[in-house]
Image (cartoon, rainbow, N blue to C red; front, side, top):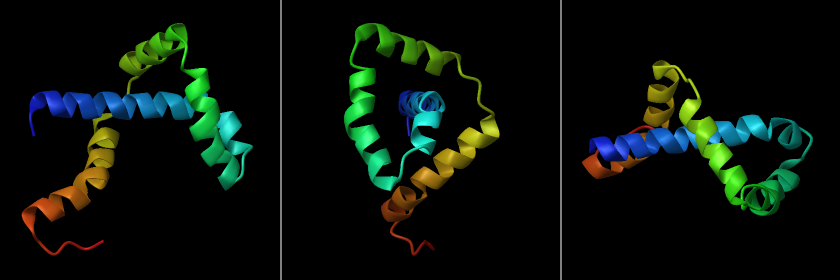
Length: 92
């Protein structure tokens, strides 16, 4: 992987962490179907405005997360793709 790709993945991780932190109370009050509807309907409406999307990006860039957490989450996320690309038998 290239450095730019890793930086992009890092930024995406930060963005989803900021969204989860900002929406935590709303998500905890929902059931499964309500959570799906929240991500499908309400969340895009919330960040559609340029001002709120810029605020989201500023929060994501300024978020401090431990390197251990990022490496663990990236490892868990990419392990199926790595196994498929290496054509090895990986445990699920």
